[in-house]
Length: 319
Image 1 (tube, rainbow, N blue to C red):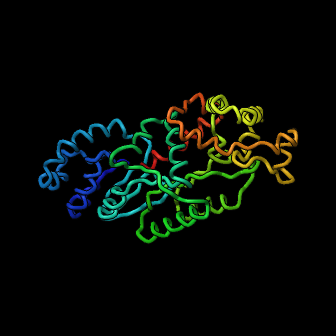
Image 2 (spheres, one colour; image 1 turned 60 degrees about the vertical axis):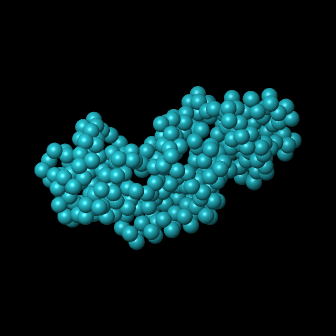
Image 3 (cartoon, rainbow, N blue to C red; image 1 turned 90 degrees about the horizontal axis):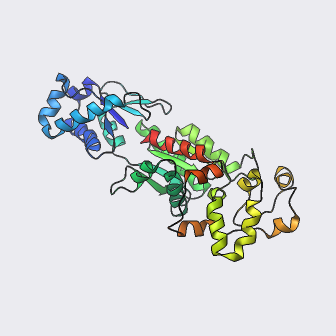
C-alpha cells in the first residue's frame, strides 16, 4: 500500500508510531507517498530518525511515477479518520495505521496445502511477481487455512466484528470454491459467505467454476493420462465434455445429477459413461508433480485467464 502523512500526524503523533509505519516501508511492505521529505514539516521526525532520510527521498521520488497507480492509499492523520471498505484512500490515526500496516495480508482458502499450492501455480501464470511476495522470508501476504465454507463464514464474521470494534478492517481476503452444480446455480453456503463478506466489508472471491479441480488444464490432463494409463478413458471422457459440463462436473466422485437444471446439463451423455466417470486423484497428481507448470495458454484454454488476473488484482489492491 501507499502511505502518506498529513502534517498534523507528524507534529502531534508519537514518533514511535511514525517509526513503526516507516519501518514497514524499510521492509519493502509498503511505499512512501508523501509529503516531500524536504518539507519543513518532516524535519522534526527526520532529525530524530536520520537513517530514514535517504530512504524517504528515494521512495518519494519513486512515488511520483506511481501517483495514479492502483492499490489502496493510507493517509495518516491525527485529526480525521475514514476507512470505508470501497474507498481507495483510508485515513487512519498514527497508532491505527502502525497496527494495520504491520499486519500481513492473509488470503484465506479452504485448504492451505491444496488450495495454497494451486493458487500459487495458477497466479504465477498471470502475475509471477505477486507469487514471489508469498515466498519471501518475511512475506507481506500469505495463504492461511480457512477450512470449509462453514469455517470460512465464521472467519469472515469474526474478522468483521474485530474490524468494527477497532475501527479499521482486518487484512484478509477469502477465496473459495463456488460448488456450483450447473450454470447460475446459487449454492446456499456460498451465498451466505458472500453476504457475510458484504456485511463485514471484507473481500470474498468465489471461483467461477465448481472447484479448483475443474481448472486443470488439457496439457496436464494429457500428461496425467499418459503417465497413468488406467485413468486415460476418464480423461478422454472429461476432455470431450462441453465447457459448461466440464466447469461443473464433480471431479472426485463423478456425476450423480439431480433432476432439473443439473440433469439437463448432461442430458446428451450416455448413462453408462456418466456413472463410470471419476478422477479422484487428478488434483493430487498435479500438486505432487513439481514439474507441472501453468502457462497463460493453459488458462486461456480453460477460459479462466481474466478470472485469475482479477484475483491477482484484488490481492494487489489490498497489499
